[in-house]
Length: 108
Picture 1 (cartoon, helix red, strand yellow):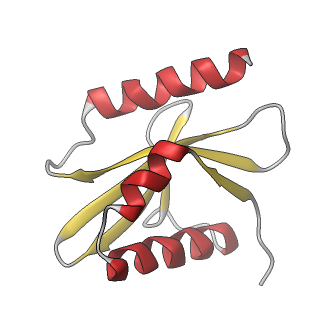
Picture 2 (cartoon, helix red, strand yellow):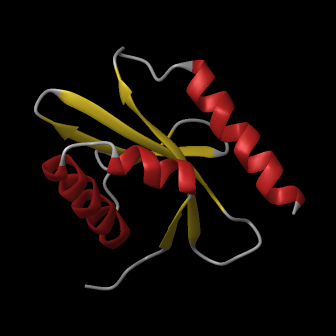
């Protein structure tokens, strides 16, 4: 199936993914691939004007990878970091962290 966009994963996000159980890692990879092929807000959802999240639910855990679209490149999403979501709403601190990463990235 055709991929609608490319995903680049930061070192911090890779480290987070590698810290998880292998089955969770595989589910995250599967969900990212699927999100690239179909538009499904259960897999890839906009949080605010700039920040998006890849969503994975596994064994009652909600794993999130935050990221943003690279405005300088066509169809590229940069994953900044990940976390296990413990509350209903995505913590503002996590969104701020992704926004700070985006700001530094775009200054390069």
